[in-house]
Image 1 (spheres, rainbow, N blue to C red):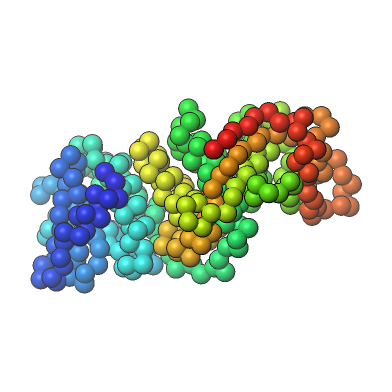
Image 2: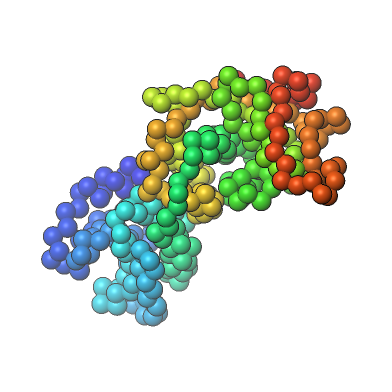
Length: 320
């Protein structure tokens, strides 16, 4: 199951407004009967059919742009999209629910998961206005997303644990946090020779842990480069294929004010990764200003490191 299949089904449904719903089966392979369609108001719906003899009552909920309703006569639970602006995100919700319940026989279990996903995802369907991201912020996120994508493809760690490790958008420490090693990601254009360290905490390692400074070199490429939208869609597909929880990923994006529906505005910022170099910043004599070694009167540091002068700390190189 993927977004292309869902889009093809949507295109085959022509809402007339005559019945309660006009819908089509999502997949014959699913044990629970999941359908997508439109209601009388031509709103997109995800419909979970229930057995005719199943008489458990269900509560109904109205969120900002998403509703959960129970139709007793039709014996179905229905998630309704109230604002078509979020239709791409709605497809992500459909895929997430499908991947979690398609092989479950127990009605109690799959209806509970259906409801739980409604609550988990409903916060993503809110109208949040932000000032948007700058070119530099977009470039930094593209680097982090590129690194995340490669981690998901190559790491033996559970997919959800990899998603949870991405802490960059939370602005709370290092960009990727694992049990024994953290990673601070810097994305710069290949013509540059320095990286900017924006606080005394960025290169401060935790006791007993390693900290790698990972520099991703990119070239601006407005035609064929990677964009936020492209990378986000690629990550979502990988997570889905690995049976992970995309709500973790979407929630992390939301920390930067990013929603699935407003990514087109950043399509003008595209970059092609050229090289990735990792430095062991925990080694003795690595040039850094960190909280534990500077006077307490000094704070909010901002400085740059010349990369051509720290080549002896290189531990890994990758060409793309």
